[in-house]
Picture 1 (cartoon, rainbow, N blue to C red):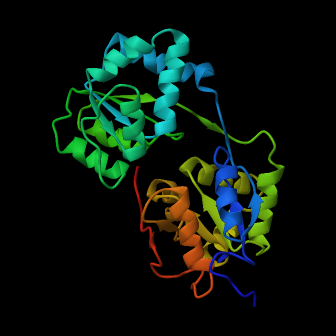
Picture 2: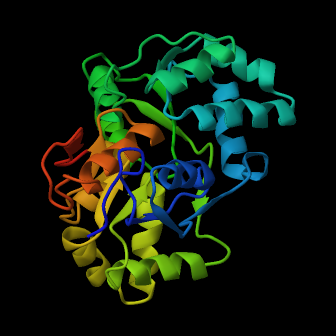
Picture 3: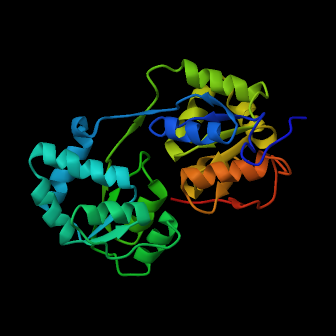
Length: 294
């Protein structure tokens, strides 16, 4: 048995990283705590300025400004404004957003909103989209035009709940996820999970989960991968939205109480370090998700 040290609680452990944009940052945090890191980026993004769907949604909102806007991610909100700058409509979009009821999902998004010279109308303490949805549904949304910034997936449950109450919803696809150009690292990561070579696998976005499962399905390995995540490699997700696609498949995930990379690493230290209970553990500084809807 490898003896753990206080400053290297993950010594002797191997952790998979499926992130693309934040892979180096997360990997460095894990290595600093002693872990060996295996990288398998599960996705890539479409450059915002080249995304015709984003341009079409933006033009629609400029032609008929929304009553409410739901901002879900800081990087997406900033990217939307940067794309609008490149199209020459940044000021016009800013006016449309300033005239709307602006809802931000959490503090990072709130910071991006304020950095743009705007002010949010409301933000949930939980950083939960489900709470944003319930807040909207408690109000009269019938006939209201609501722009919803997507975070890489259609957010069908969120959008349909609003439409079911009579709202006109304009999805804003600020970035879209596509499979990685080179699938080999992701394939190697999936193979390592199936071979029992990983102690944990980290996911920092729902699209990363979905892309990993899709790739495993293409290779005929989906059921085996899900079984391995249930029984062997601990699936650690940055938050409930990220965890939802796994929870829907009966995979119990672990999540930090604060949805950030640092707390995610500390959760793994508590779970996998000396004295940690490992897969199937109790609370240990985080939460087991039961199910989280967008």
